[in-house]
Length: 346
Image (cartoon, rainbow, N blue to C red; front, side, top):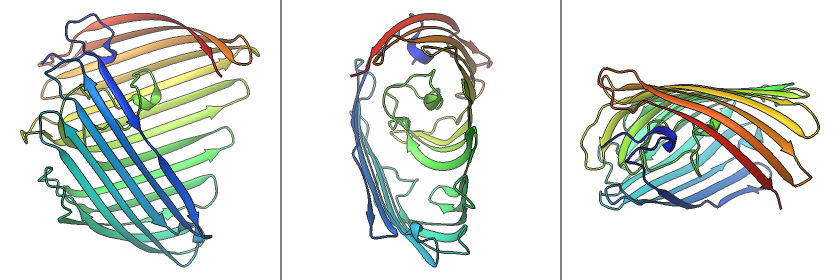
């Protein structure tokens, strides 16, 4: 039951191997001038080398059919979302959601809509039947190719919820702000692929522990900023997430969790072949009453292009984790990593 250290860097006695395979086909197709079909399916299998952890197989499927490209008159959309986690020991968890949306274009820039449908009950995660009703109402606004926004609020099987997203593109970069409330489980890796806590896309993995089987309501706020200049670039990512209504796979309630983090990255093209990159991140997490810890990292990388297909990279990173709660069970550690990579693209 020891907390597995972030990044698996220190030489502790509770590290385990994790193998993951996944298959993720996707289809996007225009049906006529205004109707768009979008469908995808993901299959993943996760295995651990420790018999006490729970191997799991996951399925997710999404389907949508909409006429948003019309830009005038009535708008409509049909959607179906499905997720299933099959654990080696615990019972399987499955969730379905079917949505019908109807709206209209107020003008060429603004669309208002209302949606409703059926979804699996959050109170009974082992029954996939779509017995609960839900609804939401909102609007989408896109005055130009540079700015788009969509906000909606409603009632779902787990209570009231709202979502929103704002995207803006300017001359030297872009920024986005999003918020979403959704039911999920620890078996699903939203980032997809191999986890790396030093990458922007994986800042949401600080609460997950390998092999756990939990379900929860995720309330997550994200903000991203990207700036691109002639020889320099800058990215800034921040997030805040609260995980409530947490239950283990057998239905046992557990404490709520929360995490807040920020990461920045600066790049400088020093020459035709040489690039420097400096990065840093800070994360605060709370995994129970009085169980808190702070995580920080700083990195420096030098990338040199040897040829049209080959690159050489030298990097250094410093990472540390400090328990800060009165009941904290996190491990305190400091890690220094020096890496050398040779990459050849075929």
